[in-house]
Image (cartoon, rainbow, N blue to C red; front, side):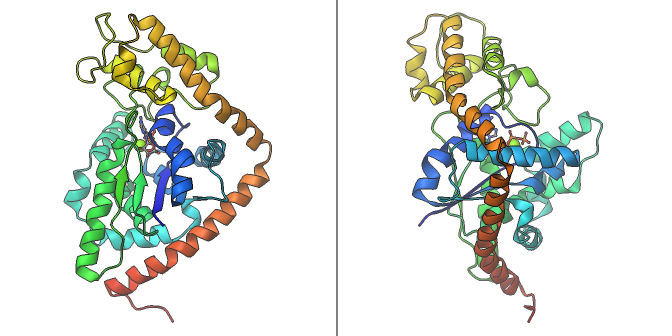
Length: 332
Ligand code: ATP
Ligand code: MG
């Protein structure tokens, strides 16, 4: 059976980008067709300036939202990265296979390092090595497919390169994974700045639709989305990025095609209204289920405890094999 692994960082409130780019497929497709693991990758949240209590709160919230989105713990494994030591154990070995140059070429490292400096902070070493820990997350489980938004393609490529390199040098140990992205909305853009990805740790609140935003807040954000000059509704990511973003969001929420949808509007107002309605409808059941789950915190704890136990059992044999292959004495 295909093994699927993917994760989400507790660095902020989850966004529409997270949902359309990744989470929705996990819940509607991946958990049914694959042996799937979904992880709150909390160690990755420590790579940027963070507040301990907030990371804990956001980890719980992200896990609750994963269940609210439809992940069924009977069908897939939902767990927290720091509960399974194998991730950090394997990350060190992969640091001994990756190079400094590879890390510095990562686009997200450059972007996030620049942002930390703009905010007056220093750049943590863990931000540089983050993609190695992510490779460990993936490789520890013999993962075949990593369903992600397309901003993560470069990191999954790195995981592939490290798997191939390790296998060549030390003998076959890892499955070589590949990234998969949705056909539409693989990169939802910020509503106020359509040149930038909608990211949960960004500072631009009005351009980001959060999954737990009230419907009237969602409506306001969509209605105030930056559109391009001109009045004709056409789908062109290059010359009309703001409009293209709205059309993609609408298409992802209604199951249509962005270019086709463009043809059915002759003004921005109606497009924005329909997009707002569609987003509100997609988020409605998720918000409701989230509220129900919040009333039963013991349920979530049980799911995460069992998830971690299952994940440990899956990761340990692969990570132990990597320790042996690379030349370490096994503890007796
Ligand atoms: P951060 O700003 O902290 O990096 P993020 O919003 O990018 O947060 P991640 O935890 O890094 O979220 O990514 C979780 C998943 O959501 C990944 O699969 C990622 O590709 C996907 N994703 C994130 N943002 C978007 C987006 N704007 N459009 C589509 N997919 C996205
Ligand atoms: Mg991200």
